[in-house]
Length: 351
Ligand SMILES: *Cc1c(COP(=O)(O)O)cnc(C)c1O
Image (cartoon, rainbow, N blue to C red; front, side, top):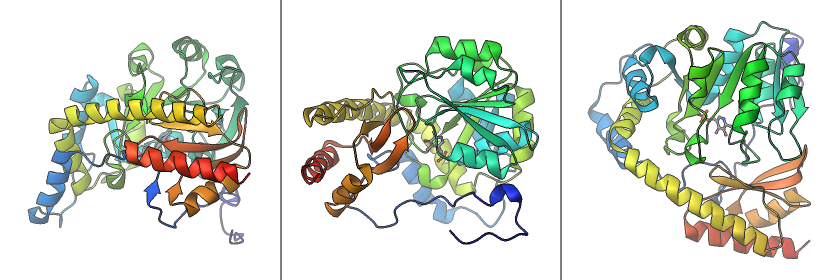
């Protein structure tokens, strides 16, 4: 890391840049995107864009996209805020809803960006442990007294799910805002989307980067009571969804829902087969409700390096709380999964 300057904000000094492996791999199973590709109507919208006018700004707050997402989510437009990826919404929500110096609590391990988004907004991240069954621990979260509590379900990187009972207990007892990140909500058996209706302090954050296959276009959204959404929108600022992104998202929401639903079925089946193959190798993958599997593996970094030499990229985690070293593998088409299992089998044989 480059040494930081005295002129930088103190909270920024130990914030790392986000790094991912830049070496390209034949089979990249490292980022949980839709490995079956992008939805067809969205692709067509991108091809037609050459004739479109993008010399002008998009609409300031993406009103057309808000309407389409409101219909998709079954809420009024005033309940929706969009962003440049859901990352943008998470950071904007923290900035809008916590004062500098206040705290944001989460159960670890969870989405690696959360402590960073807290710090860059002057907010102090506080990690608490998950329960023995890798559920969220509502009492420990409430006991922190945090202004914001973040829950990711299905959780990245574990793939595990926050139980309904734990979430309800959390909502009843939490002093401030609850952010429920459902980036992988489409892949889970049930969504907790409806909890926004149960409390005006719940913001459900979703994305078109995972099931919808549009990660490169950066489209995220959140659903919450109009009073929260309005504050997040102020913090987010105008023009965050580009003309291209809005067109693709509108096309996908209008015409590609069946395609997305079919790929979700494919991803779940692939995930379950992947878990089965991992068990055949003598490993114990965590139960997943997402489009990826986390599998504890000793010396995960060395194993992943040997997989990479065999053309397969997976995401490495070292020393995760409650889990230890592990590999996170995205579920995709069968041919990719076969390559991954073969590479992992060979990589483990070198241990
Ligand atoms: C991928 C991911 C996101 C970010 O998605 P973008 O919409 O692409 O910014 C947010 N939360 C979790 C848990 C994720 O895994």
